[in-house]
Length: 259
Image (tube, rainbow, N blue to C red; front, side, top):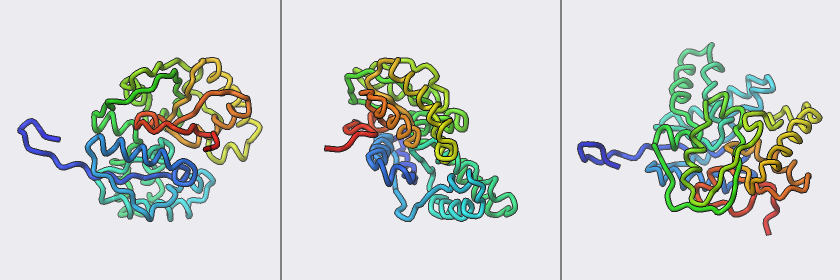
């Protein structure tokens, strides 16, 4: 990449925070994120020692464990130009780190510096890199679910749709209640399983009513929750993280058994 004067600009160094769920259940999303970031002109590294962002502990009131995990993330990622995660939920959590260390000014400052350069993948591609995918095609109809953390915590709404608009042959269809929670909420779905099931049942019905072939989103936890309900309902809707489609890696749908 060059600037207006013709001088070549150094590629930004991006630390990819893969997330626990992606690492354990859907590594294809991580590979897709890596390909998209490289296509956007980034020098990407994936620190092998990374662990959880601390969100489950934080949401459960275990601030001690959350702080321990947050320190690890800060140590691993503070020297990168950016931290990027294919999850609005994890990115939103990392942006809350300064609140965890209000009693430690030095660590709070480090946490704030990391928070300021932490982004969810799809918003980073659009808002920071001005990226637009090319040469990607998918002859299907799709609908998009806006996750709570991404939408309310990070203001992610137009960015995924701008990227998906560049996919040749993809027909985007509206989803009733696209900004409504899917019922996952991390530990919420286990603590309040009946409420969670009622919420995702309504969401699944709206997805099927859209008539879309594909359900897309930006957080694997939410996608797993909706994919499970859709499958138990007998729906044929295939579920993908938007990054998988954008990277041309939408092969096996979330919730499907691999052959």
